[in-house]
Image 1: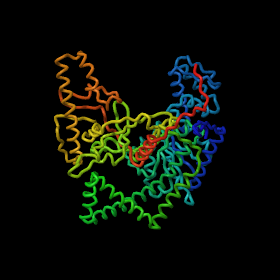
Image 2: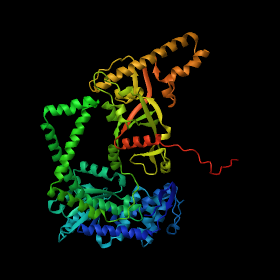
Image 3: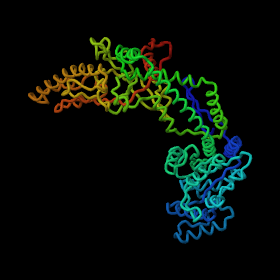
Image 4: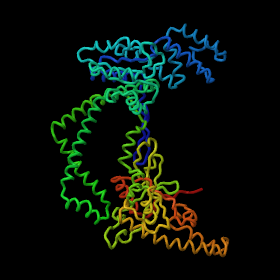
Length: 611
């Protein structure tokens, strides 16, 4: 670890700086970790196929990089380049740098210095070629693509005693010939993988500068489709892992990902088999439920509580599928197979490479987002009822609805269909913000899960809560866009996709806003007669056009109603739902904040003099 750690202790921020470790020590640790992993996997050596191993190819890279530096108006001022005059015309400049190349005994070190100066993707393509042999010595075999083809897999066939090889193929070959043809590294890997007698003796990786570490999985999927390669048989590693990390820990981690591949794929296969069999049995159990019982659970109990029948169906399926998953894994043999796969993964994964990645993983963030939120597309297209944890965008700010679920539920019986208990109509919206982690020290601030944030947090600011009538928020249920819109030309909604108590709820909301529309029209008629600048009109205007519920959101009352089309647009939109139990916990903490005790001030403390 080479970065400080910040912790909060009793409201105080403390920075802890780790002991500085020499880069060479960290680099040695990363190299040793690769050797350890290769030993565990019984891999004799790494075979690295790259067209840059040709001396003439390296010379061309050297010339091309230096010309790029000159054309960019830059220059290398180190001792190695003191004899170069960067202002000379290109022909003369080219002769000077070629002369330098021919004179210098350690050409690879010279090119390495040029690449580090540029630090661009093309440099990333070259640096591994210059350094990798020094790192891994006899454990790595270097070959050009032509040499690989000419070898006809002899280097693989020679492996004895169940030894294997790890083959790294550069993707793009710039120096092709008749022997190689137009093939790239992915195609060479495919040819090797498809040889049945050899496929179990190799682990294949595409080692390229054409993508970054964050794009490795996407490129693996792309190459698998484009070149018809079995995705379970190869992995992609970005050259940037090696080129711009002096510790090369990122490269070691890439090798770990490659070696873990077969075991992770095996675990995935076992997992999907478990889910498939369990889901089939759960589905069969639903089929075996008697009509009377099924009707009671799905229809009658839902009607009694005002719950959408589909929600109850999903609840039932979740109960049965979880039970069947547990039943499946209770089998000792199946559980042992599962544990064995996990152990194989852990044996490799526990080897420390020294890699300290603080970048977000898009895939894990996306999965965590799915676990934490229901997107606006689902919430609004399904016309889901307003519920605790719903997130609304009002103008350009986000708010989360924090209200006891039972207070939000609509009754579905005949007498009170479409109504809430005790005609409850009060919504509490709490602002959602993003900011520094130190914000969490305040008792009025509570963290809200937001995957992907690294140096800041998302939080609910309890101190800024606002009261809003549920009449306004309920309107979002009727629009697939989630916008709070009410078309006064539509007195009743006939939509079988909306749960029927909400159709009744719409009628109640319509009646309330019909009164407001009538008042707006009367006021407009009077204003048109006496003039907009009339003193009484100006005095009444704020009360007519700006309802109290909208003032705190700074929504201009004149903008919410379209007189020509008879449409209310409240600039409120439901954008997501924060799932339970996270939203339930947030509600509980909000209630605790509202019920906090107040104490008299301590007058024994010395006063602070003010200038």
